[in-house]
Length: 480
Length: 63
Image (cartoon, rainbow over all chains, first blue to last red; front, side, top):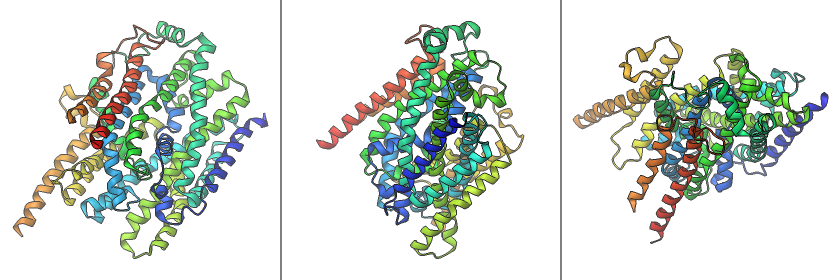
């Protein structure tokens, strides 16, 4: 049984080696470290974005959502293509501006557009609030994957500590160059395993997808579509819309746009990205197979459906390879998140208070990586919500950056820095109240809007406040 | 040819309103429930639509 941990160990060591070797003196400056010297082509940007968007959630949360909720899970398929269509125009515009002004973090964009360091800090704090949970999500997923696929031989905590250490070291040495190299390995492994499982499992147990769906529909009618009894169209449309808006707003996703070598790379990227969704479709199919083959798991166990199904079907070697792929799906986004957070913390939160040389600043960015990892690990040990609810909260927070970005591209921006700051803060505070307190805004809304995603309400508040404050402060400067 | 950009609205609406317009198990396509097939079809079409828009935009630039 000891041999099952070999694939996991080999792949982790290989990833570490690839990542560290990626730095042949490329990460001498912050620009090289944080945004890969802006020289990634179409394929690397595709893999990098795939690496950060299709994470441990793809493996665990997606199959568990299909297992628990049936066809409602399709909402995840619907929002990304809408985001990519938006990104076809938005991403090149962001890239161009970032290139002209040598930006390395998401907050830098706002600082330059609105000429306000204060706004940069607000953006960085929102980044922390949304990315720390996202990092914890990856860590938690990693622990689950390793302890399950090693048949308990490696405990979740051991796995978390070892992989965190691996991640911290290679991020410090190689930065973005390291992450993108590991992302290449990860993409090959995860595409191969998920396509294999999604095609093989229905054939193995039922003779094909069609008869699997038939069996499922005869035991649970309407399970594979959105069941009409408790379906809420307002919820669906508002959640898809919010997630589409939020997709490019994640700080680590935003800065991976900076890595592109030209704006054409990003246009091509937006065209091909939707095809990545086929990966998710197969994850859902695996979840459906589990409904029939592993019925009755309770909610706390349902994040494990994919791994349990794999263990029930295959011998330990295959389980080990799938575990190894799982480790990489946590390492890649985890490392990109770490380097985004480190850049935000030092460059946009601490630096304004000090006068650091560029060299010192870069050194400090690197050494804040282990500190951020420790913060996330500490937050992890306090536990918290389930994987999916953490993600929904994150999208609501990062979306608050969207209006200020869109308005900043208009010829005469009606929004000034005061409006942007206060608007963003009100949206964010509304989100935090809706999560952290029992106050439920849906009671105040008219009943026809029941089920409205809180993030959309927060966005509306954000925009209204943004305009009001901008107008008030504009008049003041005119009076003076 | 700026109006060609409006094409992008179609896949957005088809996906945003998918469970309202295509929420059926039958007819099955490739064994998939119709709703899932509808969504996957529009994902492919969204790529195609953006490719068409891209071709037009780069053509406009070259002229």
